[in-house]
Length: 464
Ligand SMILES: NC(=O)c1ccc[n+]([C@@H]2O[C@H](COP(=O)([O-])OP(=O)(O)OC[C@H]3O[C@@H](n4cnc5c(N)ncnc54)[C@H](O)[C@@H]3O)[C@@H](O)[C@H]2O)c1
Image 1 (spheres, rainbow, N blue to C red):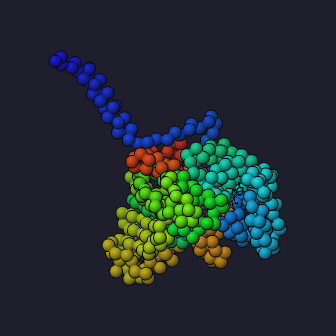
Image 2: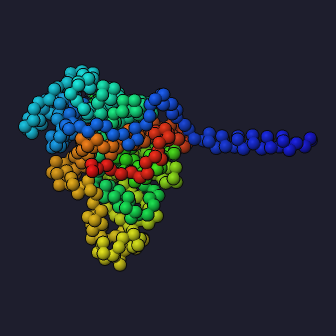
Image 3: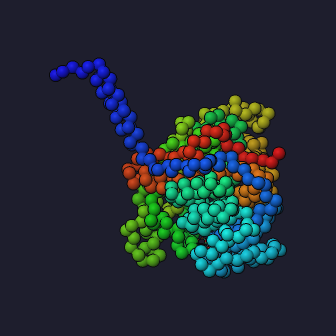
């Protein structure tokens, strides 16, 4: 056999290397990233003209919506201008909230599935607040921004990659805020722990966990037109990831110095979903898609990991998990609140019984309480009292709404931008892709399209 010449040898080696690389990359399933149109730029750190009064219109007044209307009646600098739901009685029930709070009646939109469009078209509204079923969220957000409104959308704000990119492109073109109403990032343990993490108590945060584990058996009959069970029936994957992923991403500074690169997902078979349908309707279901328990692992650019779980089907205590592993400490919210810290991470005059701290056991309740008091987040220092009075998941819902209004009134970047929305909402489609391909890795796009590293560290904005 003829020997390879040196040049041919080099060419062959390069071809071999190139083939090897593309083979290893080909294991990663990628989804299309649409190109930005000419002249369109990102909205990282977006600020808009301060608003003296935030005039709001609500769409979707089912189980969740009326609570939002009520909370807004307690927020200074707001005016409830319009209310919309397909069901007229639901609009009327919210007018009653306004009457009870001695506020003027709002303009009512009802009676058809398109009535919400006229609400978005009004010229006396600054913010459209969307609390409908998942399938309506993105189209309503897009239409509202196209009609010059900021938009706040309940979780998950988008269910598909197409919807996510459409929301991003609309926000970038219109320069309007598009915030997802993720309330759990404002819960007391989460925000206190975020503050501790930002102050370096846990060292470098390496791994975070979150979940939505909530048996919805008692709630299924009350969703409008059965939308939620229908969605689970038709879709595999983690269809409700944001309560777990939101706090996790804030701890890891996602698109503020790090980015999620890829995920792998796996689910159990579907048992209790189809059994529920058969038990309540007699229908024998053979096409139920959503597994009773779905698990997702994510790896970031900076070598961090995230574990997210979803289970709305089996009897289990409620849990959002919320767990953090750092080089110098650990935090855990469910089933019990715990911290574990190297003694060197806090000084002895800050907490009681410092000599009992160690790096392999949880701190005592007394120490945990002292730490939580010392590291109470400035947002809680300001709002804890009124938030607990107004309520909504123990106060976090009120804090979410208050912060949204506060930032709009002060012309500050919102606590959550359209890229947070995208990152936290990409799991429904991307986990389904992974699961349907034997848990193959699926790329998570850089939704900022190049700006993920411009801001260093996640921070809430405050007026001077
Ligand atoms: N953040 C949280 O803690 C939390 C808690 C509960 C629900 N949610 C979210 O809130 C949203 C609503 O959930 P829910 O439990 O209130 O559901 P729901 O079924 O009780 O209410 C949905 C409402 O939307 C209305 N609607 C549907 N299509 C409409 C249209 N075209 N125009 C106007 N109104 C329309 C329905 O009539 C219904 O009143 C969901 O996205 C859910 O995931 C979030």
